[in-house]
Image 1 (tube, rainbow, N blue to C red):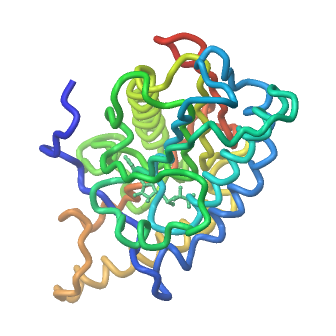
Image 2: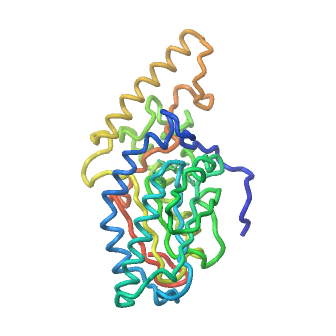
Image 3: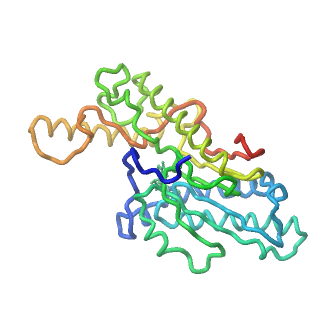
Length: 302
Ligand SMILES: C[S@@+](CC[C@H](N)C(=O)[O-])C[C@H]1O[C@@H](n2cnc3c(N)ncnc32)[C@H](O)[C@@H]1O
């Protein structure tokens, strides 16, 4: 399998880089809240599910490899990596009956799309960190690492970014055309199905790519935007928000068309068929707010 092919890459939409007032670094407290809410769950998963002995790691030797996929350019990734490493160290202390776990070394890979502002990320690496750090550019929908390279994969608030907009929803001739909406309101059945199918394919691609990369006994933790069971997306806070954004954008495009104005609104040449590139996937299988998967053999992910 190729490991650096940038041909035919879908356009990526990186977070705003740098550390200015509009930057992701200054505007990611919501995502930090998601991470903080899951901290205890991740800790428990590490204590109860991570199998260090299968990996051949002990308190006396070895390197533990962690990857943050979709790390962006803000500080959340550093807190997440710190939390994971502290939990692994605690597990080692318990296993080694209170001996010093410091002999185990930690390698962290921060990974995001090619356009991500890795410079800001590297410049802001905490001085007091207890891990080695490296950046890995590329899409998590393909392979990013060599075989059996990772002990722990973490991805927070990133996997709901679909690999691409479902083609049907921007096709005027399709019954799934998402006419006057920028997201999945549920009003057109085919739209929900198109998003759901795209999400299913994307998650499958993500897991297929990770399967060879993660060692047996390793863990994959995914924190993802989701819809509570039984509540239609438009009735959730995010749904209401997108409806408001959507109607503003639709009004703007109508104004542009009416005035034949040159206002720079680029909706891929289809101003009346709007979409969110990170469209919310509404599938019953995505209704939980977190997924923890344990890699129990070298070739399968559950
Ligand atoms: C909202 S940010 C979350 C950042 C960080 N994980 C956090 O919790 O603050 C989503 C990130 O996912 C990245 N992303 C989206 N699609 C991706 C893909 N296919 N491969 C790698 N990263 C992707 C985006 O570039 C963006 O940096």
